[in-house]
Length: 66
Image 1 (cartoon, rainbow, N blue to C red):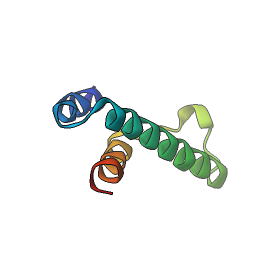
Image 2 (cartoon, rainbow, N blue to C red):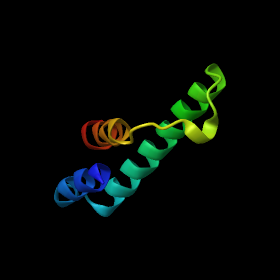
Image 3 (spheres, helix red, strand yellow):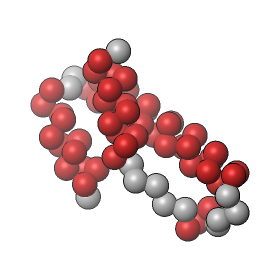
Image 4 (tube, one colour):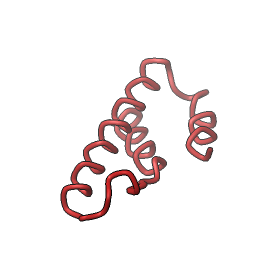
């Protein structure tokens, strides 16, 4: 729920292209981190949970400032 609220707060300052890039960058970076953690730990993949807000923030930084 917090992820959606954060995106709704950012939307007025982003174009549609920037929003799409933000979501692609956030999703792909979260997937990479998820795969690395699942390879390193012995924890079940189904029980591994990562917060998405840090990845959204990373995506916003990359899209908006770089």
